[in-house]
Length: 120
Image (cartoon, rainbow, N blue to C red; front, side):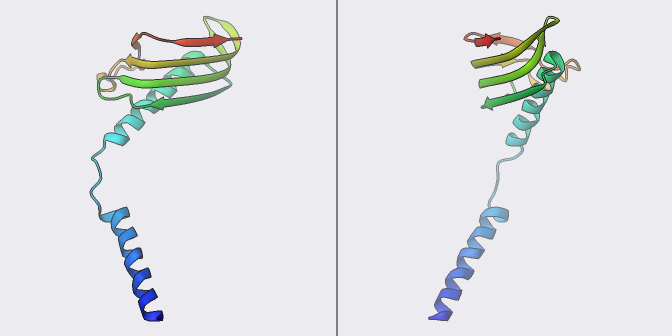
């Protein structure tokens, strides 16, 4: 009985190791999107200077700069020199400057058709 359960544990452990280290993973697609999202986050922090900020990005920015949805929740930020206590933005299907352009000033909005925002 002990021998069977040990063999089962060994097999499960081997499968877990294979899935973690041996299974083929997609190239750097996830890493590229993560780096582009970090660049986007940094641009919002630099431009709006919030005290706190939460950004949720669903899908992207991809190589063309498209983001399926972006949500921002900022506290204590600046808009045109005016302090805003709380700013929330929800924008599905937007496009920013493609990450590959390497623009030093950061990503810029190219297209955003449906933006919901509230500021207090």
